[in-house]
Length: 349
Image (cartoon, rainbow, N blue to C red; front, top):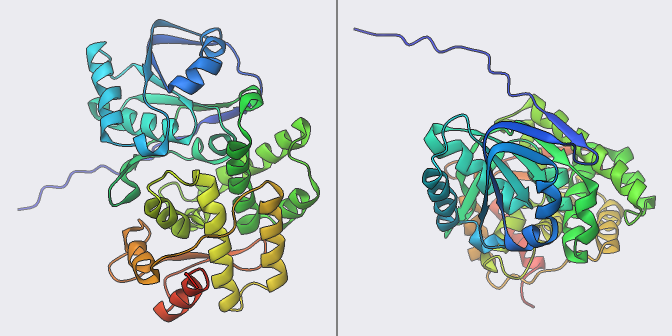
């Protein structure tokens, strides 16, 4: 006997991304703003002046990638239960990528899913982390290995928040902008080479281009079954670096910058990228004081950690390799010998 459950349906997860001064927003429900002490101290009053709701609560979690864990998720969930949030209630992610990822994940599992919006306050979260619905947390095995795809209802990108951004955080965001240009848009990359992103108008143009690029990719492949994986250029290597350094040495974008250098070296080994193009990318990253070197203490251990990557399956490792500038390859056919040859170039001499 068979019983069929007909669940075929079209779900519209579309939403708008507003890149402008934060508008006045009213919510006809309970709202919780999830943030951290640093962002709250700088900008919470500004946000509260822009929103109204039936009830507004503030949930503060510690600042830093090392706190992107189950304890912080529990803090968020316990507060929602204590204030009797229901399925019509709303969360606001107010901070950088860490806050956005955790808020989205908490929203995806609270009472099997409630709505949330993103109000990103760092360049990295504005151009990348807040767009696309990836949510999650870290554990001892690696970065973002626990999570869900849960799209926000809206994203509000207000350049005002970047006025207080430290230089390292700014550079970390630039790394994600460069990532999207290298993989999908050669013209955008050439624009970045000659641009000064310290100029407000130029930066706004770069943010718009980066967001449009990511939105186009996500619209084609929401759940990362294909082309969206290309947005992980630099991340496969970078996540291992973050794991090895316990998330305390590099910001996420800094680790991704080093990861791009390693991916470029792999592309050079495979005759997919010229040395000149690799140097152009390195030069652009260094223009914003991003790190481009890392010493691997044990290349075999580094290699084995790749298998915790979400894109890998069974014994196959998937790598995102640039093809020149403006194109990309997603492949699981790179030999172990080739990868170890690249890693050895970054090993202790």
